[in-house]
Image (cartoon, rainbow, N blue to C red; front, side, top):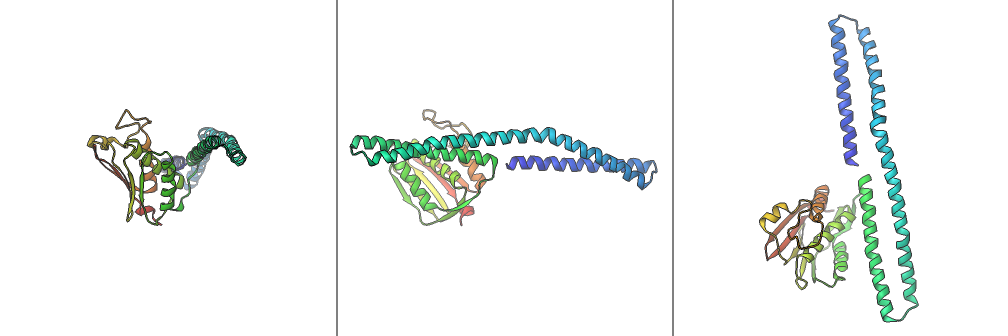
Length: 281
């Protein structure tokens, strides 16, 4: 949305400048021929009418098809989102009902796994909705508790029964695009787990306005650190992933005015620091 607004504003500025230059040229032309101001106004009015007509035609040629395409994509996206939500709601409702009438432990565990999968699917659904709306509209910021959000995200990762987590965060309010902020936290925690051994702890510490996520994993070299924000770059090609995670994290931080810094050393670990001073409530 901001890019489209910028394009239209730039087009308007170019159009106004062009018309101003054209009218000044007409005035100079008439002045050299010693014609009256009345003739200038007549000539200017004719030029203006031609310009308005030409601008109207160009607008319909350039912007109308694009607007129609955007409307179609919006309608299609809304239909897809709606259709995805129906089976998700059905799975959650029926799983909850089935658990009430079953006492067999194995069956309950299986139903529990279905519930966990539906929770993850719901998160993916919310992220899909968020991504589509972000492309079409500006996402409003909201005030949230950093401690509560981190506690919730850590709980989700702890269910994977992999790395232990240490959370040292006091009550701290921030105003951000919440779903986007959750995504970057998930990305950073996922990376910390991915590049660490299962038994090594991951620490999350808030010191004044700086939130740090610290692991004791494989770390990165100075060369890796120079390229780490590039799309599709992966320091360890043996690890799964598309290599776009930190690029998205960096993009989000730039949008939200959050300063990000990565300190790392090979075979020692990595510390990601987020300076939240500019989003503090």
